[in-house]
Length: 199
Image (cartoon, rainbow, N blue to C red; front, side, top):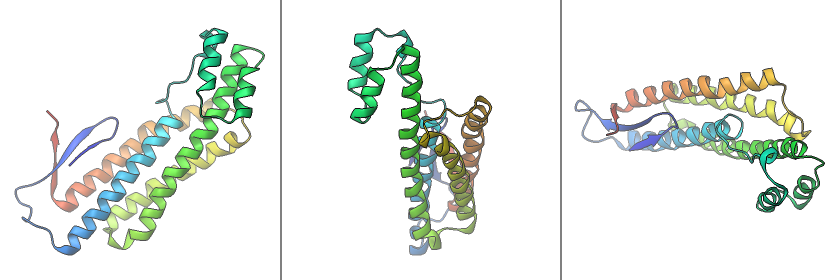
Protein backbone atom coordinates (compact mmCIF):
# COMPACT_ATOMS: atom_id res chain seq x y z
CA UNK A 1 0.00 0.00 0.00
CA UNK A 2 1.31 3.46 -0.85
CA UNK A 3 1.29 6.56 1.34
CA UNK A 4 2.16 10.16 0.50
CA UNK A 5 3.59 12.35 3.23
CA UNK A 6 4.05 15.53 1.20
CA UNK A 7 7.79 14.90 1.00
CA UNK A 8 8.02 11.18 0.35
CA UNK A 9 5.90 8.65 -1.38
CA UNK A 10 6.76 5.09 -0.55
CA UNK A 11 5.31 1.62 -0.79
CA UNK A 12 5.26 -0.81 2.09
CA UNK A 13 6.02 -4.27 0.75
CA UNK A 14 6.38 -7.52 2.65
CA UNK A 15 9.90 -8.85 2.61
CA UNK A 16 10.79 -12.34 1.44
CA UNK A 17 11.61 -13.38 5.01
CA UNK A 18 8.18 -12.38 6.34
CA UNK A 19 5.60 -15.05 7.10
CA UNK A 20 3.13 -15.69 4.30
CA UNK A 21 0.21 -14.73 6.47
CA UNK A 22 -0.43 -12.94 9.73
CA UNK A 23 -2.15 -14.39 12.76
CA UNK A 24 -5.54 -12.91 13.54
CA UNK A 25 -3.96 -10.95 16.39
CA UNK A 26 -1.31 -9.53 14.07
CA UNK A 27 -3.93 -8.69 11.48
CA UNK A 28 -5.82 -6.71 14.10
CA UNK A 29 -2.67 -4.95 15.20
CA UNK A 30 -1.80 -4.10 11.62
CA UNK A 31 -5.28 -2.73 10.88
CA UNK A 32 -5.16 -0.47 13.94
CA UNK A 33 -1.58 0.59 13.18
CA UNK A 34 -2.59 1.47 9.64
CA UNK A 35 -5.44 3.59 10.99
CA UNK A 36 -3.13 5.38 13.39
CA UNK A 37 -0.61 6.06 10.64
CA UNK A 38 -3.24 7.53 8.34
CA UNK A 39 -4.55 9.79 11.10
CA UNK A 40 -1.06 10.88 12.04
CA UNK A 41 -0.43 11.87 8.44
CA UNK A 42 -3.72 13.75 8.26
CA UNK A 43 -3.28 15.57 11.56
CA UNK A 44 0.32 16.59 10.95
CA UNK A 45 -0.30 17.36 7.27
CA UNK A 46 -3.24 19.61 8.13
CA UNK A 47 -1.15 21.52 10.67
CA UNK A 48 1.70 21.90 8.18
CA UNK A 49 -0.70 23.40 5.64
CA UNK A 50 -2.89 25.51 7.92
CA UNK A 51 -0.20 26.74 10.32
CA UNK A 52 2.94 26.37 8.22
CA UNK A 53 4.03 27.47 4.78
CA UNK A 54 1.86 25.16 2.70
CA UNK A 55 -1.16 27.39 2.14
CA UNK A 56 -1.73 30.04 -0.52
CA UNK A 57 -3.63 33.17 0.46
CA UNK A 58 -5.31 35.85 -1.65
CA UNK A 59 -2.93 38.67 -2.57
CA UNK A 60 -5.37 41.41 -1.61
CA UNK A 61 -2.71 44.12 -1.77
CA UNK A 62 -2.28 43.36 -5.49
CA UNK A 63 -5.96 42.99 -6.41
CA UNK A 64 -8.42 45.55 -7.64
CA UNK A 65 -11.54 46.20 -5.61
CA UNK A 66 -13.89 44.22 -7.86
CA UNK A 67 -11.64 41.17 -7.91
CA UNK A 68 -11.10 41.34 -4.16
CA UNK A 69 -14.84 41.50 -3.49
CA UNK A 70 -15.43 38.53 -5.78
CA UNK A 71 -12.92 36.45 -3.79
CA UNK A 72 -14.42 37.55 -0.48
CA UNK A 73 -17.89 36.44 -1.60
CA UNK A 74 -16.57 32.89 -2.08
CA UNK A 75 -14.82 32.59 1.28
CA UNK A 76 -16.11 30.13 3.87
CA UNK A 77 -16.30 32.91 6.46
CA UNK A 78 -19.31 34.26 8.35
CA UNK A 79 -21.32 37.13 6.86
CA UNK A 80 -19.92 39.45 9.52
CA UNK A 81 -16.35 38.47 8.69
CA UNK A 82 -16.94 38.93 4.97
CA UNK A 83 -18.45 42.35 5.59
CA UNK A 84 -15.45 43.37 7.66
CA UNK A 85 -13.19 42.36 4.77
CA UNK A 86 -15.31 44.25 2.24
CA UNK A 87 -15.26 47.45 4.26
CA UNK A 88 -11.60 47.36 5.29
CA UNK A 89 -10.07 50.81 4.96
CA UNK A 90 -7.15 49.61 2.84
CA UNK A 91 -5.94 46.60 0.91
CA UNK A 92 -3.23 45.99 3.50
CA UNK A 93 -5.71 46.04 6.38
CA UNK A 94 -7.93 43.67 4.40
CA UNK A 95 -4.98 41.29 3.91
CA UNK A 96 -4.08 41.43 7.61
CA UNK A 97 -7.66 40.81 8.66
CA UNK A 98 -7.95 37.87 6.28
CA UNK A 99 -4.86 36.26 7.81
CA UNK A 100 -6.34 36.60 11.29
CA UNK A 101 -9.66 35.03 10.28
CA UNK A 102 -7.97 32.33 8.24
CA UNK A 103 -5.70 31.40 11.13
CA UNK A 104 -8.71 30.92 13.39
CA UNK A 105 -10.36 28.60 10.88
CA UNK A 106 -7.06 26.81 10.35
CA UNK A 107 -6.77 26.10 14.06
CA UNK A 108 -10.29 24.64 14.07
CA UNK A 109 -9.33 22.27 11.22
CA UNK A 110 -6.18 21.24 13.06
CA UNK A 111 -8.11 20.54 16.25
CA UNK A 112 -10.65 18.45 14.34
CA UNK A 113 -8.01 16.15 12.85
CA UNK A 114 -6.01 16.07 16.09
CA UNK A 115 -9.15 15.01 17.96
CA UNK A 116 -9.74 12.23 15.45
CA UNK A 117 -6.18 11.00 16.00
CA UNK A 118 -6.59 11.21 19.78
CA UNK A 119 -9.90 9.34 19.83
CA UNK A 120 -8.72 6.63 17.44
CA UNK A 121 -5.56 6.03 19.44
CA UNK A 122 -7.27 6.12 22.83
CA UNK A 123 -9.93 3.56 21.92
CA UNK A 124 -7.56 1.15 20.13
CA UNK A 125 -4.24 1.54 21.93
CA UNK A 126 -4.44 -1.95 23.45
CA UNK A 127 -3.91 -3.35 19.95
CA UNK A 128 -0.79 -1.26 19.24
CA UNK A 129 2.76 -2.39 19.85
CA UNK A 130 4.37 -0.34 22.61
CA UNK A 131 6.98 1.14 20.26
CA UNK A 132 4.31 2.42 17.86
CA UNK A 133 2.08 3.66 20.67
CA UNK A 134 4.91 5.54 22.38
CA UNK A 135 5.90 7.31 19.14
CA UNK A 136 2.28 8.09 18.31
CA UNK A 137 1.60 9.64 21.71
CA UNK A 138 4.74 11.77 21.44
CA UNK A 139 3.66 13.19 18.07
CA UNK A 140 0.09 13.64 19.30
CA UNK A 141 1.17 15.59 22.38
CA UNK A 142 3.75 17.70 20.55
CA UNK A 143 1.18 18.59 17.90
CA UNK A 144 -1.37 19.54 20.54
CA UNK A 145 1.15 21.89 22.15
CA UNK A 146 1.63 23.66 18.82
CA UNK A 147 -2.10 23.96 18.17
CA UNK A 148 -2.82 25.30 21.66
CA UNK A 149 -0.06 27.87 21.33
CA UNK A 150 -1.44 29.17 18.05
CA UNK A 151 -5.02 29.01 19.30
CA UNK A 152 -4.29 31.64 21.92
CA UNK A 153 -3.48 34.13 19.20
CA UNK A 154 -6.20 32.98 16.82
CA UNK A 155 -9.03 33.38 19.35
CA UNK A 156 -8.02 37.01 19.96
CA UNK A 157 -7.47 37.64 16.21
CA UNK A 158 -3.84 38.45 16.93
CA UNK A 159 -0.80 37.72 14.78
CA UNK A 160 1.94 35.59 16.32
CA UNK A 161 5.25 37.41 16.85
CA UNK A 162 7.66 36.75 14.01
CA UNK A 163 10.17 34.79 16.10
CA UNK A 164 7.45 32.46 17.35
CA UNK A 165 6.07 31.95 13.84
CA UNK A 166 9.51 31.06 12.49
CA UNK A 167 10.13 28.58 15.31
CA UNK A 168 6.69 27.01 14.89
CA UNK A 169 7.03 26.61 11.14
CA UNK A 170 10.47 25.08 11.54
CA UNK A 171 9.10 22.59 14.06
CA UNK A 172 6.21 21.66 11.77
CA UNK A 173 8.46 21.35 8.75
CA UNK A 174 11.46 19.58 10.25
CA UNK A 175 10.71 18.03 13.65
CA UNK A 176 7.39 16.48 12.71
CA UNK A 177 8.69 15.16 9.41
CA UNK A 178 11.57 13.50 11.26
CA UNK A 179 9.14 12.02 13.79
CA UNK A 180 6.96 10.62 10.98
CA UNK A 181 9.99 9.11 9.27
CA UNK A 182 10.99 7.43 12.52
CA UNK A 183 7.57 5.96 13.26
CA UNK A 184 7.30 4.78 9.64
CA UNK A 185 10.55 2.89 10.08
CA UNK A 186 9.27 1.42 13.34
CA UNK A 187 6.11 0.19 11.58
CA UNK A 188 8.07 -1.28 8.66
CA UNK A 189 10.33 -3.15 11.06
CA UNK A 190 7.42 -4.35 13.16
CA UNK A 191 5.57 -5.92 10.23
CA UNK A 192 8.49 -6.96 8.05
CA UNK A 193 8.03 -4.34 5.37
CA UNK A 194 10.69 -2.62 3.33
CA UNK A 195 10.67 0.68 1.52
CA UNK A 196 10.52 0.65 -2.28
CA UNK A 197 10.96 3.78 -4.37
CA UNK A 198 8.02 4.64 -6.60
CA UNK A 199 8.79 4.32 -10.28
